[in-house]
Length: 128
Image 1 (cartoon, rainbow, N blue to C red):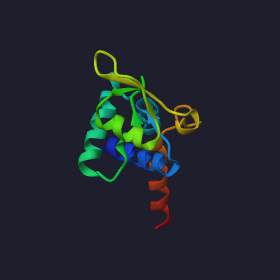
Image 2: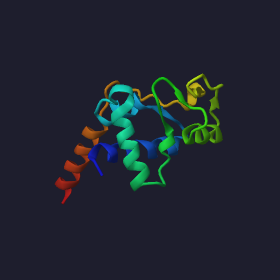
Image 3: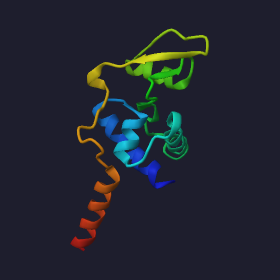
Image 4: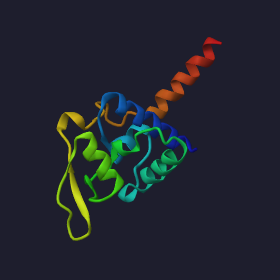
């Protein structure tokens, strides 16, 4: 598994504990990378997470534009969780509505989980 996917997995775990969701860009920025065009980098990470850590709630990562396939797995998980999925458009996409307090926004702009993890690893090595 890639280092990026491992960092995203940590953030998904955090989202699960807080019972929240976050956008691709918010998660990627927190993990220290760009989500990519249309979330491509995040989709790659989520694919690896779904394959290797299927117990993680990958669906807590939502597209930046908050649209999903109306009849897809992501819409089903989000609906079960409590989000509202709008009517499908001609392309089969629907808008996701999430209560503001359920959408995670990390306070520190540009905070990097990768740096924090690296600092923890360094500290652990010093204690030995």
